[in-house]
Amino acid sequence: MDQQMLIIGGVVMAALMLTLTTVIVLQQRRIQRYSTPRYGFLGKPLVAAIISVFMGAGLIGGLYLVSQRERVDFEARADLDIQLEVLQEKISVNGNQATYKFTLQPKLDGQFYGTEPGAIWNAYWNFNPAGSTLPSVSESEIGLNAANPSGIEVTLERGTYTLLVTVDYRGQKTQIETLKKDIVI
Image 1 (tube, rainbow, N blue to C red):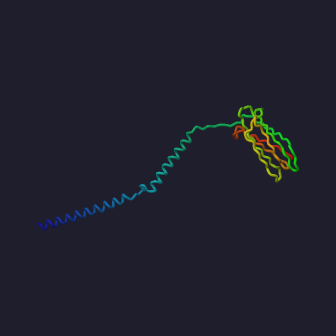
Image 2 (image 1 turned 45 degrees about the vertical axis):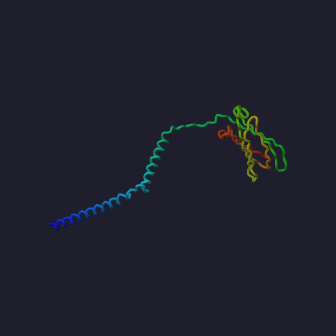
Image 3 (image 1 turned 180 degrees about the horizontal axis):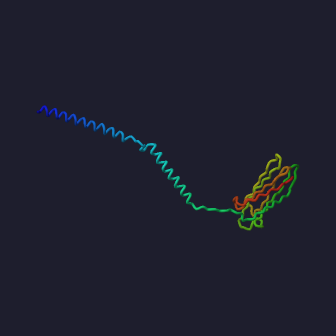
């Protein structure tokens, strides 16, 4: 009986060891399978998906906000009557060159330089030769008003010029008047 008990104890012990070994091997495989990410836990595919979701939500939210803004329709009109007059005076002639004095007299609503206090005008002069190789001449006058009127002296070579005067009123390009005039020397 002792020998039988020993055999039975050995078989039970072997079965127990085989069962425990099988459980350990299966648990190790299960741990290894669950520890490798299938869908990218902290991996690139999952991060890319999260970023895509946030970008899509931001785009949809931005479009919603833009569509909810109140639309403002406006129309810009020039309510001022600006008139320009250019006076020219020949000062001297020297061979093929002549020196002229040009004066710009802008009128705002019929008044020279306007009646508005602090009204500032800027004048940009361009003398462009017509159909020749003569150089163009450009001048500018900044900060013109009734106390500081316009007046430039320009020396031009013999030829026909187109004078282009652009006036900027109120320090911004909202009121611009252009005057073209042919000058024959």
